[in-house]
Amino acid sequence: MKILMILENNFPPDVRVEKEIKSLITAGHEITLACSSPRSENGVMNWHNAKIIKKKMPDFIYKSSVICLRFPFYFNYWRKFLETILNKYEFNAIHLHDLPLAKVAKELSIKHNIPFILDLHENRPEIMKLYKHVLTFPGKILISLKHWFEYQKKFTKLADKIILITNEAKIDYISKYEVEPHKIIVIPNYVDINNIKTISINTDIQNKYNKVFTIVYFGDTGLRRGTATLIEAANQLKGYSDIHFLIIGKSREDESLRKMIGKLNLSNIELLGWIPIDKAVSYIKASKIGVCPFLRNRHHDTTYANKMFQYMAFGKPVIVSDCTSQKNLIEKEKCGLVFEAENAKDLAKKILTIHQNSNYDELSANSYNAVINKYNWKNSSEQLITLYKEL
Image (tube, rainbow, N blue to C red; front, side, top):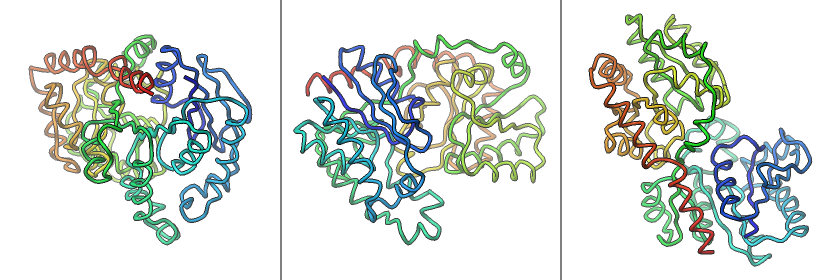
């Protein structure tokens, strides 16, 4: 099939989109990805035999995306961009990554008489409840969470197929959004074992952090991800000279994290900023524990973070907050521990349990074997291939 993918961002990088493109091309499909953002440069490029069509987005249009349900500038921009592509090339399906452009994608799928696949990486209305710009003026006036919920409910019903991350999300969409079960395909965000094994390890990093019991967090550093809880846990454990914390990633709230570390006068934790995955794996491999300390909400309860499987691929025991999906997996595979979300004392206690326990090697082996045998992209991508076979 000839598939038009749509991504509201620059590309690359995007780990999930990259994995999907490679799997579909290997299965014999032709992929064209349309992407646009202020960071994009106009032009067409070849990426692993996929055609990537990029367009630089004006800042005004980009900023208007959050109010697109009220003012259609963003929709109009994308409609024009995508129509140009659809009129130039022939496609058999539209595959949209994430919710906002669902209205435009559905319109175009009807006009060109091709199926519309809605690939939801996250539950947008739920996660918007935590965005600062949604909760403060003028966003609080201009952005209606109720309208976003109604929008998601409408277009999950109108999509021909919906891709979700977890079985917990599937249950949620069936009950809350009244989506027909047969339309939903669960494609978890598992790690690509073959890709991660080819990444070379920096021995200097390995040697530096191997000397201490290092706890690593990798990804978005926003407060909703539990990064403040992790800093508080570091404060609880600052009396242990051999325990060290690494936070790798960035967000708009990094300054708050830096101030918090300074106020607590902590020397056992580092904010390393954003590091690409091909470099970050050296820190993961050198660490003893990987953490996913997310705050509880409907989105976090029904999703997996890719980082969890990256930790596991290197045999790291994982400590997770009690968000439903990740809690269920860690307890099922016996490859780590679960703490109460936002409870820094409980997180510190769980870190010490692994630090002082003799069953570290067992947890490590369980973690690695779970990814090798079950939670890997090779297994996950089979559902994606089946979806397009059925289309």
